[in-house]
Image (tube, rainbow, N blue to C red):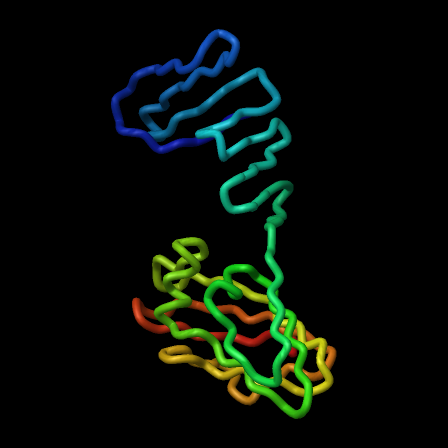
Length: 187
């Protein structure tokens, strides 16, 4: 197993850990990388990042798992039982909103671009232009829902609705330090 890490160009061979860990860092000056070689099946970095012998990477802090080219993440569903409401930054970061629309067509208004860019307490924040976060919106109600943008949020496909018992993926893309575009896919 090898892990590539960028380090200062000093040309040294570095060894870390105890004999039990048996890890060795080898610095390749020409490639400016560090290769980590370990005979163990698992390597844990900073107690939250684990690299398995099969290449699976687990990041415990955010519930993200990457293996065999697939990303799996922990999502936190939120529930909105109202004709209309606001899709908050916290709900976007959670990844799933179940909206029960009743008593007539409703409008789901996104949070402001400032709130979406900031994420939820620093989780899910969009730190650079072009970064995206997605949220699945499930309309399990009996009415059609229209998505509207909050302050400085542009809906790319305005007029797209989420029908009764249908779902859509909302992709929020940071376009500037103060603006976000929302793409609605699959409604």
